[in-house]
Image (cartoon, rainbow, N blue to C red; front, side, top):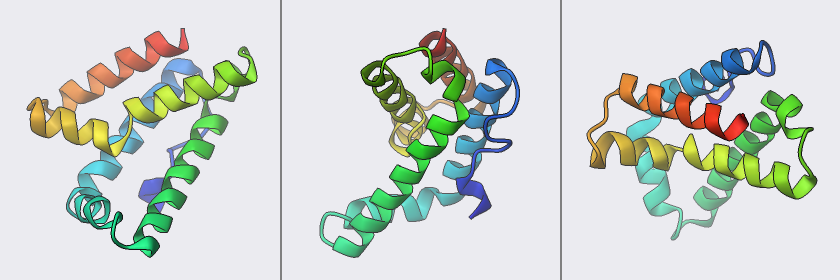
Length: 123
């Protein structure tokens, strides 16, 4: 369960918070990779798995809203919702898997790309 939490949520300046998010997500995805693949494959046929996955995704979005509250407060509701959706997509399990598997990116390469991408989104 602790792997599903952003380390030091909401603490530090923007750069520090970006690093906490990226490192937390990378640690999580490396740890859950095999089971996460199975859950995503079977969720379409298993309503309980789909519900559990939706719950995890909703919790992740709530964490992003808390973690980047200062940046989100500078936007309209629609703009903040768009930004949260973009951050969620960029740092999702699916993004990690695509970068690691399809594109052959290493953990340090993914970390660098995500930090640069988040810095651009939050600027």
